[in-house]
Amino acid sequence: MMPRKRLGRTDIEISSFGLGTVKIGRNQSLKYPQAFDLPDDQQVRDLFACARDFGVNFLDTAPAYGYSEERIGDLLKKERKDWVISTKVGEEFTPDKFSDEGQSHFDYSAKHTRLSVERSLRRLRTDYLDLVLVHSNGDDAEILMNTPVIQTLQQLKQEGWIRAVGISTKTLEGSLLATDLCDAVMLVYNANYPDEVTAIAKSMQQDVAVLLKKVLGSGHICHDAHPAEDPIQAALDFAYANPGVTSAILGTVNLQHLRDNLIKALRAQKLA
Image (cartoon, rainbow, N blue to C red; front, side, top):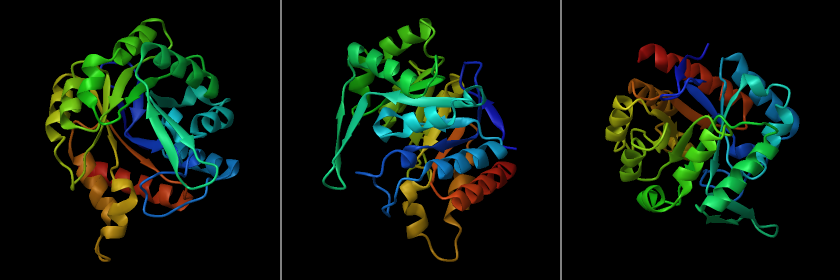
């Protein structure tokens, strides 16, 4: 079974492998190497069941992931207590009906933050959110220091709507700042981008959870690798070798790929 770790200073226990869900709700304006169709409900149920069978209890979603929140809410409404669900605030994505592209815009105001959380509660069919991350536009320091978004999330945490608060960063500066303000930080860390190792070390010192995104480089790691290599195993070995990592988040709509990734994640943690 997938190991579990405490989410920072909270009492929340999450699996060391998290299932990313952007691909169940959105297939426009993404950086994956290949286009894909959104899976049907049975395919998504099968993905969730496979993850659960391996001991995974952590799902990552966001309003900017298209229909992801609604689908999770519909398909897991009877199993809510079995899952730790992370969603986000700050980014809104508008799909284009006439092309494969869409547009994102960002809003970190107190009003929009509260409205976004209320909407996520409705979409996910729940009366609490386990973790809410700020979806960064790339200017992490400005967001953390000069907008009310973190303070608003902390207020919502005090009011009982949110159990933990964090940010999905895009810069080392933002990750380092986040360790002083948040319960969790989601960051990029892989062999091609090891720069965030200092933020992981600081997070570990301050008991802040570290959630890894783009572990496989949005799928490009597999396409760029030498045929004799196993790039997924190498990427997971690298991720889990750092003891400050709480969970690595990977997403797929291919059931066999998910099963293979779960097995490789377990193997990587045995080696760590």
